[in-house]
Length: 139
Image (cartoon, rainbow, N blue to C red; front, side):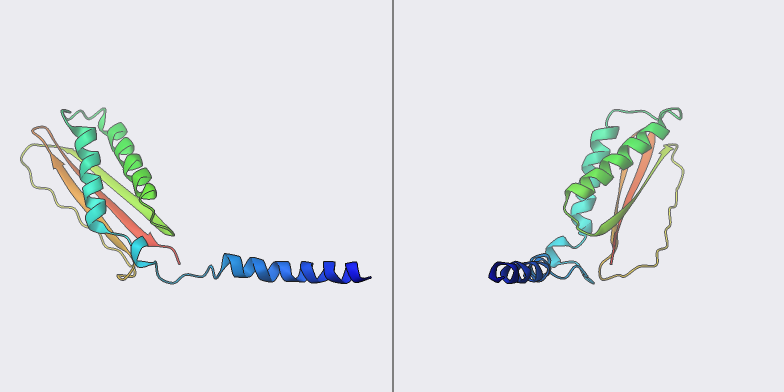
C-alpha cells in the first residue's frame, strides 16, 4: 500500500511540475529582444531586392513570378530573424520604369507598441520595385 500511495503522489505532482516548467503562455507584449525592428527588416529587404533584381529588365510576363519569389524570400527571412508570435504580411509591387510618379498607401489598425512595418524601394533603368513587410504581434 505504501507503493500505491507514493505512485499517486508522483502522478499528482507531475501536472504541477509541467505547469512550472512550461510557465505562463499568455503573453501581452513581446520581450524587447523579440520586438519587430523596422531598421533591421529594411536592411534585409534591401539585400533581397538587390540580389533578386540586379541586372533584370522589366518583363510583364515574368513579374508575377518575381513578386512571388521576392515575397516568399522576405517572409522566410523574417521567420528566421526570430520574431516570436508575430504574423507577417509581405507586399511586393513591380512596375515598369517610365519616369512616371507612383503613390502607394496603406492603413492599418494595430497596436503601435508592438506592431510595425518596413519597406524599401529598388529602381533601375527599366523597373521599379516596392516591397513592404508588416509585423503584427499575435496576442
